[in-house]
Amino acid sequence: AEHRDDQLKEAALESVREYAVLNTRAVAQCGGIAVMVNAVLDPTMIHMSDSLLLTLLHLLNQEESRVWLRSALDVQVLL
Image 1 (tube, rainbow, N blue to C red):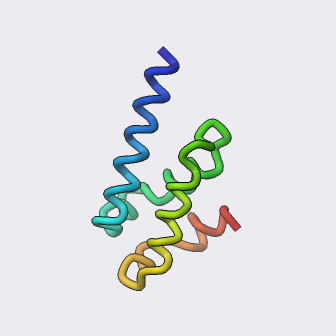
Image 2 (image 1 turned 60 degrees about the horizontal axis):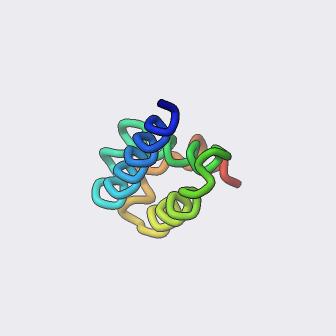
Image 3 (image 1 turned 135 degrees about the vertical axis):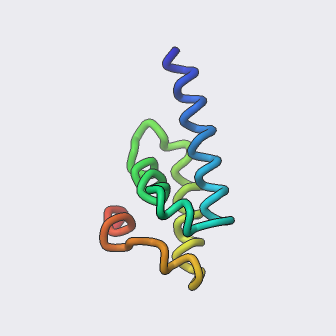
């Protein structure tokens, strides 16, 4: 059962990651940015950390999505 849970978690994270690029505002407002940051820091999700981190960097690089990142609460954890 744990393996199935891991697969569902990965699929959910991948969906959040993709949707964050399409609609950063919606993902940020429902806590999805924090979920991605926490997943980057989760040692069990190491295989997804590169794609999640690249997505976060992409969002920080785009002026229109940067305003939706609460850098003091979410992204600062990565620094």
